[in-house]
Amino acid sequence: MHETDLLSSPQTGGDHRRLKTIIALAIVYSATIGMHFAPWTRWLLLGLFSVQALRLIFAPPLPAIAATNTAEATDLPFFSLLASAKNEETVIGNLVKNLCQIDYPSDRFEVWIVDDNSSDRTSEVLELLKAKYPHLKTLRRGENAQGGKSGALNQVLALTKGDIIGVFDADAIVTNDVLKLLVPVFQQPKIGAVQLRKSITNATKNWWTSGQSAEMALDLCLQDLRIRVGGTGELRGNGQFVRRTALDDCGGWNEQTITDDLDLTIRLHLHNWNIACLYFPAVQEEGVLTVKQLWNQRNRWAEGGFQRYLDYWDLLLSGKMGFLKTCDASLFYINQYLLTVAFIPDTIASLVLGDSPMLPAIASFSLFLSSITMAFGLRRSYQVSWRRAILQTVSGMIYMLHWIPVIGSVTLRMCVLPKRLKWVKTEHQGNGLDILETIELQEIESNA
Image (tube, rainbow, N blue to C red; front, side, top):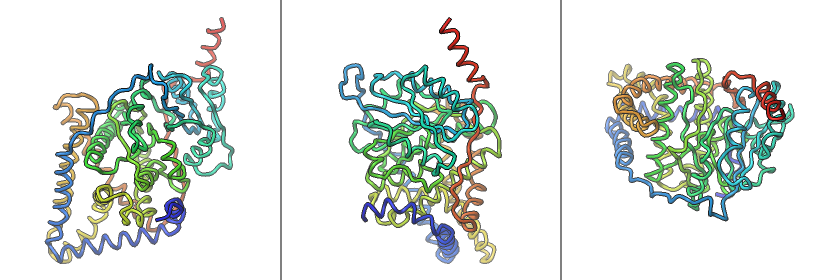
């Protein structure tokens, strides 16, 4: 497969999205109904998941990474830390302060904030912050700028000079030693990107944010296990770091997707780069507070996640990623998307043929394994007791059921509606302070 084919795949792949989705669902429906005429196939599918589960359970630990003494190192990588902000006046000040005060040699990192044509006071806040923090650089996009977050990142990328590109959401907060801890990870030549564990800052706000906290713990634990057995680690947007050479291999961020992180994940693996995921340090972010916000956010994630398989299906089936990664990505796709969709034909076939449904046993097995993974993830991520982890897991797994209607509605919509590049902004609450007044007051006090 030529490099030009890989780079053009996202653009050409989205042109026939409805047809591809219909074909994918037709295959799922036919295969599911066909399995009722060949009962042994259900045992084959359950066996595949059992083998994968055993591999994850007995996954060997990754080799320890030796720490680097950044005080003595003379060839430290240069980091460019990026964030795209649109109407983020409530949180952008905290992000800039956090990133500019990271404990790392001052001549080896820079901070870039892309003001994506904000209509609130984001621009004013950034102008005041630039006078206070020499590391801060800004770029304002015009009203006709295209490509959403991917377009913003591509536009600023040409202005950066980092060996490693860090990407953050506007509400992100990281520990001040984050870059020092990343240096030894990127000393491994095949690591193309690193994803930090996402931690929900307002996890105690309500049941929904508590569920998101458990979900992030489950996600990172599963990612870690998949990587240990040679599977595909994935990027999650906020708190992701990408080696510039790996990003150049992929042609930058794809502006034809609504989930830049998931799309870049596939392209990195297709170029034979590995992705590492770290429990510590974590990146903190706000969880969404309401059912409506959660629905909009998860619909975007599910649509982008499904879309990447439609865009790159031929390259995935070609084995370009290697046997283990291809198997891992395929089983993840089946478990996350196709099993949910297959419940409809499974139910229909059961009623028409008078047969017992096949998928409840497989789904129960998957939920059981997910529960165990979530409990271990909560224990390791937050150092809670087993009792606390189990209680949070019970609540968290109930919360996770929201993915069933999300994926069902998304696949139906993708069959009917053409591809639309619509980015739904997640509203951030911030700390409730008037950022401009706080900065101005600090300036007055410092000049007094």
